[in-house]
Length: 173
Image (tube, rainbow, N blue to C red; front, top):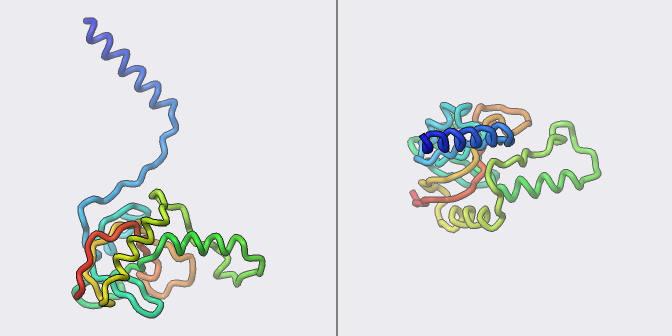
């Protein structure tokens, strides 16, 4: 009886404490790697979440993207972005006193669902950039955002981005 009473009191205190505490939404981290195709096909399910995704990374002039390894399907493409660049651009826009064209007045979204660490961000990019090939088979961890651009969109893929957190695997093709 004494154990039952103690258990009830502890449970009651925990319930009172939980109700009194502000609980914030914590994003679910997709631990098991998923394919880029699955991510692109179910973008709203993974929107604003931490995901581990595999595909082929392509870099070039004004292009840093994850694409399916089985052919270049632009409708499945996801832009890969640097958290450093997003923070830098947001800070620059805040400091800029010259009026911007209307399409550029909305600063990039910096509400990361992860703890931003500049050194970690740069290390993840270094893993991608150190490979001599511009086409890589990769597994990346990042914040996936659908509907992220805030500018004119010509393809569905133009509105999807992965903010790079970590580079897990890199294999030249």
